[in-house]
Length: 184
Image (cartoon, rainbow, N blue to C red; front, side):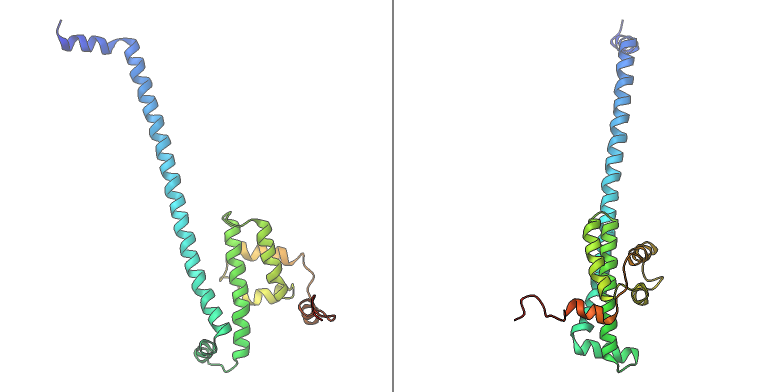
């Protein structure tokens, strides 16, 4: 018998064919596992890109609103663009827009599992105070179409559990009639 014939006879044995089939199945299994792991890594990387892009865009909006809150020349430039001399209202609008944007960013972070719900609720409660716990005041700045429906719905549900405050109650919350702790 020739060497080639011996090899063919050896490979034709049922035990060898069974081992070769088992090896092929293991190889397919490892390949599928590696493919799934690669997909998971790529998906995570893609999500990271989206988060970073969102952070950059949100950061730009926050910086612009913050500039109008604290910088007279930026505020005046925005007022000129909008055709108004009412910089006090524009500054107030920018401040409230900052609050809504930061709250929306916190909501997105919570939705992605980056921020705990407890931490988000603390952000929400603090921001809600500035809107006197009043949904309609909040929705004036958080308009439909500018923010996600999930965020707006969440805010509507959370505001519905709060008691609206008057301007005087809000004032007294920040400036108690008996003075702040530590005032002499």
